[in-house]
Image 1 (tube, helix red, strand yellow):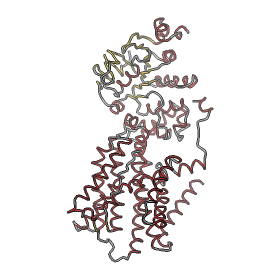
Image 2 (cartoon, each protein chain N blue to C red):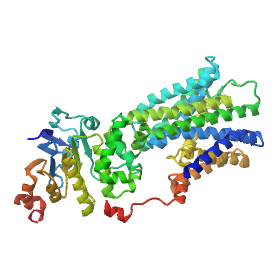
Image 3 (cartoon, helix red, strand yellow):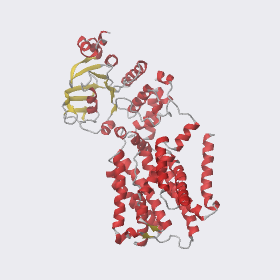
Image 4 (spheres, rainbow over the protein chains, first blue to last red):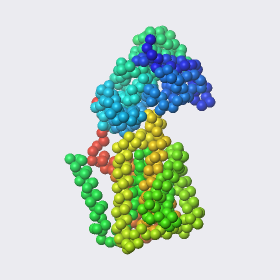
Length: 243
Length: 325
């Protein structure tokens, strides 16, 4: 078994005084593994990522990153400890260049030479980033912007990347590119915790799948097995699992 | 080639600025030149905060007035000579701005605008109320830094002093725009929360920009005190001075080094024209207000980006790029 880089243990969380969104949820992600969270709207998928990245403090439970309890730490502190979060939708700085966007990902790195080496590395991983290096990010297509976000997230060489609906609003071909890039991240040893509405496509890429329902993990297991699980097809994927 | 023509244009502009006091036909145009440089320096200083972070302060005249009064008081009360008074006053104002900024830049958008207006109102009341120190509403007379110079020679000297200040502020802006600090400030302008999530120390960066901006505005205020030598709190703490900084920057383009300067080159002479043509009416205020409305409606990014778009069509993501994305 590989090293567990992220462990979410028995999390309970919610917004304000409203009812709990997460109710005793536990998920672990190992190094170089893609874990996918699927489930109906309101199941708490994005909330899991918000708690994991420090954007939302849990009411109870722990977030453990590479063996260290990081529950309640600020997003910047988690960033420097190796956890990056790519938010839902397009989150590039639209008026800044691709170069500025990517370099902002390594903002906490003070060593210019190291930053330049990492920039070269992400340009190799995401060729479109290198090709459009001097372009204004807001003028790129949706898929290109998503790759800029991925590149930015990798500038600190994180151990785990949280991806929230990376294919949202993208056409099928661009979605394929995005999932190819997720696969690429895994091959470079980065662990990925993925939230995705396109459940079938996400499970095809992921190693482990977790089906969320009412703020807890309802079914989990190898992603390929989940795809064939008739309960999943009936509950969440419509006809997708039968395909 | 493009860079060569830019450098040639810059060199011509610098040469024209340096030659201006020697080629203007009368004292009034020299005075108008000093005034324009003063506005250009204050607007460019304002743009260190407004342009980089998107925080619109209408209350920067507080720092202008404090810089002016600080310089005057250090000369009259402490007996300092003009250079230490000018620099000392500006440093104290910058420190004050940093302290105020810790609280002020916690709020964004319209709330920050209101806080900035409150600041200028409070400083105005403070200076007017502290009659024993500041002279209250009767104002403060400042000794001449160059007692041997006549009026024309004084304008001549202050033209170059304000030009030097403008060059210093523009160089600072330029360095910031190319620095890691500048990238952090621009990220704050676009999305503060996102910038923070990437590790940009947003609060520290905003406070620093606020203080730096205030430092240069205070230097301009101090030079104004030395030049005009008669301080009226109603004028130096006028919200109009702060509004002009915003108007000039918006008109030229807040995202550009030369934007506030271009705005000042239009607004300051236009204001003087209205004063000369129509006398002490409020028409120049109405004209400034109308200009601000027109800029916001039709050129929200300012003249420089609008002109740049005319020269080269904006790059758009093509259908091919969409497909290849």
